[in-house]
Length: 349
Image (cartoon, rainbow, N blue to C red; front, side, top):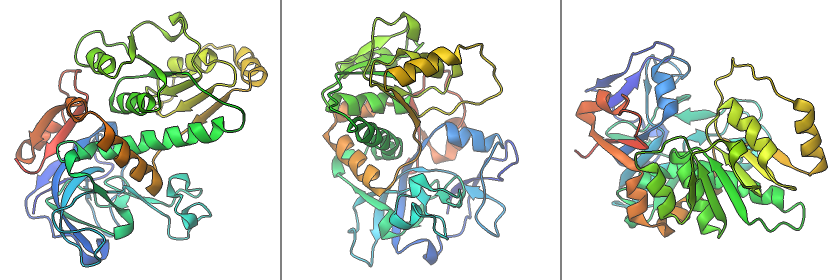
């Protein structure tokens, strides 16, 4: 069968293998036919050789962690043949740590977790894959065109779950949220914010392309000025760019008792002249919280599946700016000129 693979740590080793082995039975009882995988910056960084880890005893790693497939067989009865399914990316570490032992693998404490298509588990960019029932998320049939958005949506669902848990420390009735960055994570964060009835503001530097209209279609406000120029004191900020200057600016922008959730990952190596004392003063005196969020556990995947099923399906479909057949895989992993939101590798074409 076909599989998109890399040699981890070797830049530009991406290739399409035509005779990749069928998925091993120990991967899981549920056999799935791949429909599509989404592509994100993590895939690009693995292709560039920055990280990635092949399964034990193997030299190559199958890419793909944003999955969508259709069940071929499930002897456990968890799902039925023909059901849409996505595979949860992270698996708990083998020890396990205190969090992994209670299925909070997104909060793994020792770093020995594994991840499909990223770390020590084969990904979903292959014609067929297997998954354990515990890590199989059934999808509403309405999500057939867009179900590969479930993985990024699960990240956002976790972010909102933790924002609301932190907010519960006091009498907290948030009204407004600022989301920085209008990529897939930012737009999905805006979607879940509108589903919560909040006044939503999205900041991005793009003035053309689909992003402004996608934000406005949610009933949200699109901004292109700097964070400091915004006439806004949000109750919540979801930071999705990882840009160091933006990260620091939103920490100062959030209102009293505010919560800043950082989902973007900075590359590091950049020094900024910044008044750390003033930031400390504001965080302390205004009871503000800044926290980071990454990955998701099972309940977040389920929450994301419900949120996507409730969303305007036409709007979700507009997030996918390119669908590329597997035979043209190299084009899928190349830049689309800067206006791409989500590129999808199509296994059905």
